[in-house]
Image (cartoon, rainbow, N blue to C red):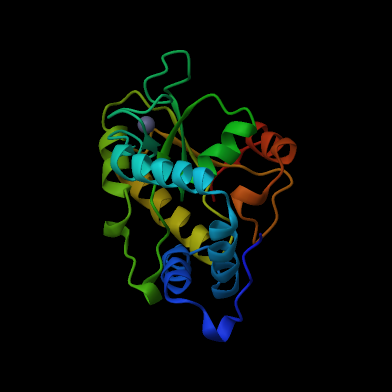
Length: 208
Ligand SMILES: [Zn+2]
């Protein structure tokens, strides 16, 4: 016996609440929130309980790495604590999901996650991003190169430019590069295929 799909104008109260919960996620549109709510209640009860347990565990257990700012199971994430990776090269990205894209491209250095991009219209200034903590990491003297891999749209480029100026002012000896080959204007790192991204990282050029 399947559940009847309700008409959207008379969404039952609990579906409405569920829809609102999904819609709290920035990547979910109102219509997909409705679909997700209906999809969820359609699942067998056991599957629903399993999902609830996973959501609850993620909500309480997930940590933010105190070095790079990525999500982590521990205080320091697996990538930061991996001594086989090159600690001299740090790739700066806007969001955690960018890390997964760059990982798929075979990058073997470390990361720094900004947690967004400079966006004056939405009142996001440099102090809202993890730029100070990047400067602190650089002051250790162990980092030789920073790869600025923010998105190639207006906000991402402005953010990279700001960080470039900060680094050059305080640490002129550190090389600042950007992925180059094959990445065009407007590109968002998360949507680049691994092969293209790999080439863009291998052929990186001096920032500017
Ligand atoms: Zn980390």
